[in-house]
Image 1 (cartoon, rainbow, N blue to C red):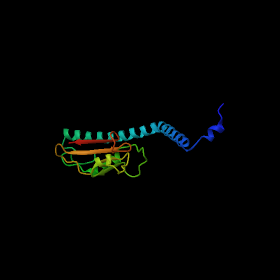
Image 2 (tube, rainbow, N blue to C red):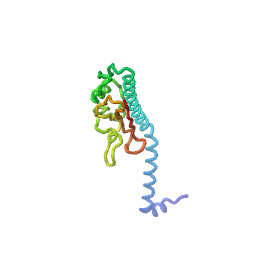
Image 3 (cartoon, one colour):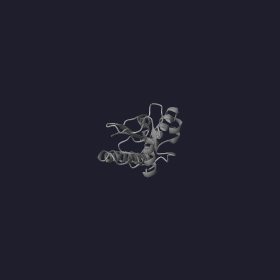
Image 4 (tube, rainbow, N blue to C red):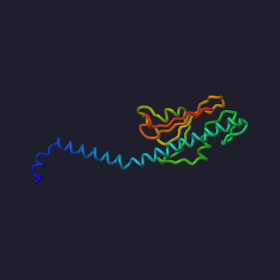
Amino acid sequence: MINIKFFLKNFGLLELLVFSSFIYVLSMLIWTATTRSAVESRANAIIENHSVITDIINEEVMKCDQNPNQKTSWGENCSLKWTANKIVEYLLNNVELKNPYSIEGNIIQAVSDPRIEAEGKAGQSTNKGIIFVSDIDFSAEPGSEWIIGTCIKSPCVAAGNNELVSIYR
């Protein structure tokens, strides 16, 4: 039989530190295992939002390539530059996107550099779940680039934690 008095008498600071470290590691492993599905579902919702926006813009580019005399879904001539704010306004009003992080404000935002917003920088926090698009108008010139990006999970700068897509006309 185990003598508890002997065990407690010889239980010092080092043993307490080892025991509490073991409990901490065990609790973090359990917490990670129990929250994994929620984190994964949020990440999948963000990736789906990003994909929907990218697909819509790509469809407009292809539609306008086939018939340059028509108008885009947001009302601009296919043969002219497209205004970033009109595109964002159209997407916000006509596309139903999931909001996995209960983001207040617009889930799509026009910014000067979507790469920096989606990837973040060391020491800079980035909003997860927001779709960042270029605030520069989408030029009608062949080869014009328009960037769409989002941060999926923190840290955004880590590989695989963000989505960036360039769309060309």
